[in-house]
Image (cartoon, rainbow, N blue to C red; front, top):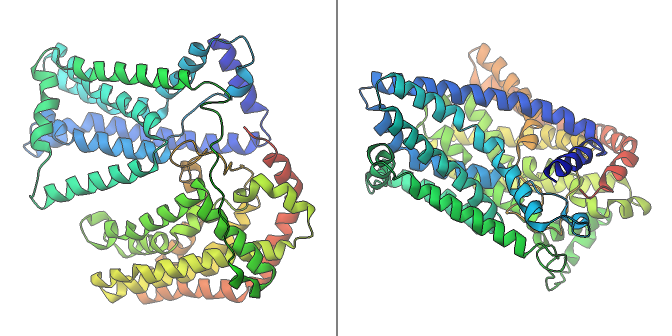
Length: 489
């Protein structure tokens, strides 16, 4: 039976209309996975010797920071890890046993990259500990206890993925604990370090997280099995409809009509609401770079990078998925006498307004100096003049539908912030950094900022010509986009 499910999954993958795009992206992501795998292996092998050179006891030191390691892992999962499930509805009318369906779906999560990549740290680290004279059996117990927490996070992600607020709770919890420890107000590691250390010191203690993991699996299994009905867990929740006028936008004609639709879409749907939340998070991204706490980030080029993300959070999160936001009714739109120029222009104005608002809200970075805020303003000019056009042009090739009616998962049916989306942002980042690097080459940071701002101004000046190219590309890709949006899985 499991072989049948694997066969169906493979057929669904190769028969997808976006198979070529998905395959290319998976290859790129594969190289990225290899890169991070090598980093984890290097960390696992080198951690012992680096900590020894710092006159620290390696195992105790690693145990001290495991609490942050596991919390950060859970946040990353809530943010990036999709919940792999089968297309269950067709299977319910076939002679498949429900326990088999649920076990296979949960088993797919166990094999996730987010789980096994951690073994590339813990296994080499454990091997080095054994080679350095630590007790073999006790290290094995410690390893089992530590890895059990990774799989506990896996099932917590499944259980908590329907609760949006918990993502914020975990982020705030990590920041609060780290801040309290940094300022010596409260040190959570005082309580957690002995617990993790006792996986090594006390035989059998590792069974506590193992039992917790078993309980989580049973709970998750029963929950999905009990809701494996078309009229229960798979039914769409009906919400009370509310109407909004927004008549003041009528003065802008067709542009105002599209803007009203976009504003209503953002306010009414879970997936699109996430863009607002993520844009707010991007506002605080600059603290990693401007505060000087991390020496590697405290460089002019990195400051510009931070400025691009601080001012362009909405651009990257929302703009990456134009026109996928309208995929559920895109076919209907294309049957109407709707000018592409008005449709694209509305998206552009929405991105520009959000970028301006983000730049104004980011004015608190003046605390780190006026030059820092000037860098953010210059990055905003570039985002408006160049990156806004690039995201809209990239939208012509975006053929992944978004199901706005699907409220499963903290970020909707597909995560609003994912690795694929981030990979598509690379060309939008490298170009301004290259322009800024020219100024640094001549030992003139002001020249670098002037070049970046100049590129943004030129993009704004030639906006009409650029929009002609974007409009032409959307028309060329029109029918392939409609075909891809017809696929629901």
